[in-house]
Amino acid sequence: MRPATIDSYQERLGRVLAHIGEHLDEPLTLDRLADVACLSPFHFHRIFSAYLGETVSGHVRRLRLEKAAERLLTGIDNVTETALAVGYETPAAFAKAFRERFGMSPSEFRQRQCATIPPFVAPLSTKEIAMMTAEMREINDTKVLFVRKSGAYSEAAAAAWSVLMGYAYQNRLLSADTWAIGMGNADPAITPADQLRYDACITIHKEVAPEGEIGVQTIPGGRYAVFLHKGAYEGLGDSYRSIFAAWLPASGCTLRNAPCFEKYLNRDPRRTKPENLRTEIWLPVE
Image 1 (tube, helix red, strand yellow):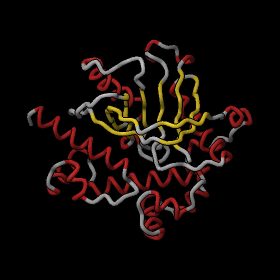
Image 2 (cartoon, rainbow, N blue to C red; image 1 turned 90 degrees about the vertical axis):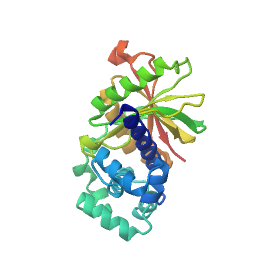
Image 3 (cartoon, rainbow, N blue to C red; image 1 turned 180 degrees about the vertical axis):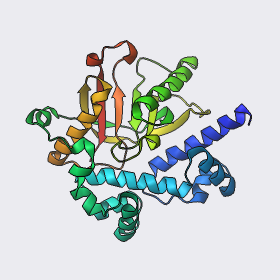
Image 4 (cartoon, one colour; image 1 turned 90 degrees about the horizontal axis):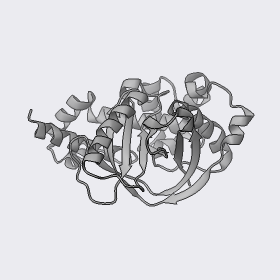
């Protein structure tokens, strides 16, 4: 396969994956996604399965159920609200699919979260709860260039940033006001490591065409609760745990149908001591 063809397929699939992530609560038929990829349904399904190792319908179903599991763990939505938020028309259809994926009903999953989801095992200390303060901010829809890699987050992030920053430097896309953003699209406590997905992103202020692994997507605008994490990236999981287990239930806020993301504040993390790293966690709320 010629490199140009490989780049073309990677760009098309990247466009489709971004579309799926932004429209999980809507019908995502094979024909619709094939149109996004500008391929026939037959060829699109074949290429998608070969690259991702799962069918189109299987991929969409898995993402919906993983997103549902994450929403259930917040304790904010009931089962019906969760079902609708991830594209299921009825709670019964959602409950059946959820049981097939996780081996228990959505209600049982929520009740057994402490025994099932490692990030919530350790009790939160008074200090942890007290330090969870948020600054409310509003942003507009934000267009970003991104590279997506799969695997354990530490490895996927390093690989994604290597590709993205090489492209950005080569094309002079970085400026003083560029945001460096990371998005982990799944919870490692729910999704197997080989199916985790990480997007390395930079904001752009001009039109840039997708190219190979370099894709374009839009981070939804709206209201966000913003938290400051101080220290090594390995500790981000603890901050997320405190946010979802302590701050969110007591805040009176509800989650919007948009992804969380991290904004990295250090200009060059590679030359920064771990204890001096600063990361903002942006949680979409209403």
